[in-house]
Image 1: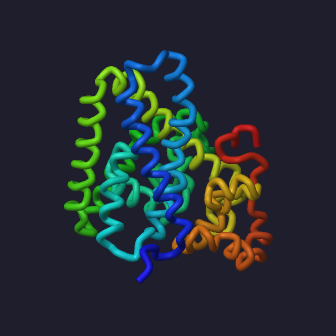
Image 2: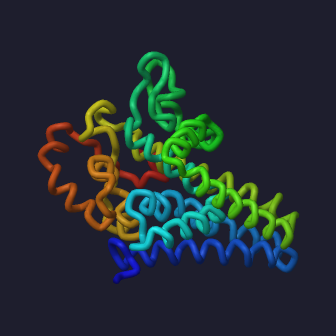
Length: 277
């Protein structure tokens, strides 16, 4: 029986979470021995690694769990919650709600997708990307996610994940409470800010928010998609969210006519630079 449910390449994503955790612990332990310049130099790659987790690793895991064993998948969710700094299951059901309503525009005063780029926009337009990204972590999507967790009777798993986060925070504080306040807190906020930037520009300038074939934006540069495990095929992902990331180019082929009819928007810049598009 294979360890991996879909592809051995998922081992790379799993390794990325181990790397993030190890480097975070090592950085906290080395706080007093590092200069301010060294901390600044470490911040950029570490914040990119933090952002990479929710956007690539966790995102793919939520749709297509890595392991053939459900016990291993649960164990990974508990462990990775420490990397995310929040229960992964909250992110899971928040994100699945996003897929259910697909960044819908405002109707009857609000949106059904709590993470919709239209939800806090004005005059029917999408919200500006800066407040969307800055405040997205603190808005009310958690309430919807928790309701889904209760419906699915997964509150026990959320409890284990909360313990994982608490233990990770306790370890980091024990290693250096100064590092936790001065470095980790900004790292955490910056990482989630970038994750929300990515989500925003995966939907900004979508041709038609009400069309299943044109409610998202893809970016097809080959290097980006190699590094990001085909995250750039975002319209394709919305069309078939349960297909493994290795199959997204195939989904593009399958829906080429529908996407051409809908004039689906393809971005000229990767999502983190989407404000240039």
